[in-house]
Length: 210
Image 1 (spheres, rainbow, N blue to C red):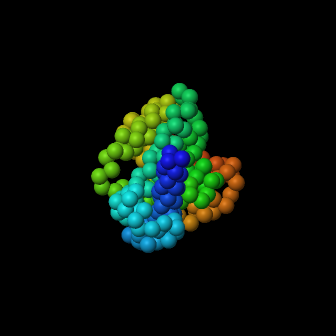
Image 2: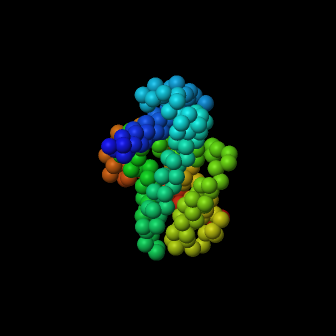
Image 3: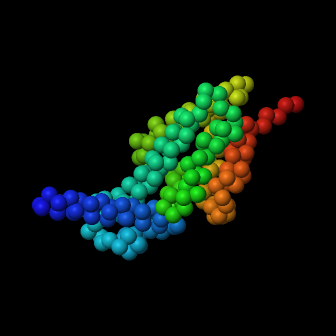
């Protein structure tokens, strides 16, 4: 009986923690970190300030945890998508894998879409002191550049990595721009039809010859 009550308390605590993270993600996506207050988050989550202090220590700790978890999930999804490619993927196949986490978040809506916008904000203005995720950022760029090298052997590695960064920046902008809402309203297959060629074009680039 005592163990059952302890389990119920732990489960209730986990739900409160998850609801605070979800509320923080939604509000951060809507307003950015400077526009979010502790009261905003607790009101939306149906929690109190004591729960924030217990689970995260402070508003800053809650926001950083929410953003870091969202970003890590996005990077892991991108790494998994790139790892699933064959040894010599075509540019459209690479573009689809690179953009897959964004397209899935658009299709899912709700928390996933909010997380996507939060990730995009962080991608454009990375917080200080987030060295823990540096390796995953580098792995995404490395995996994309390696796959590109099979299709674009005449382009050096630094330029391929630059194109991967440009493609990531474009996806971040799309997530935060009004186009995001337009894409979210479309069927997933239509989003893929529109988006994949654009990302593939960023990968391919254009080299002027005199």
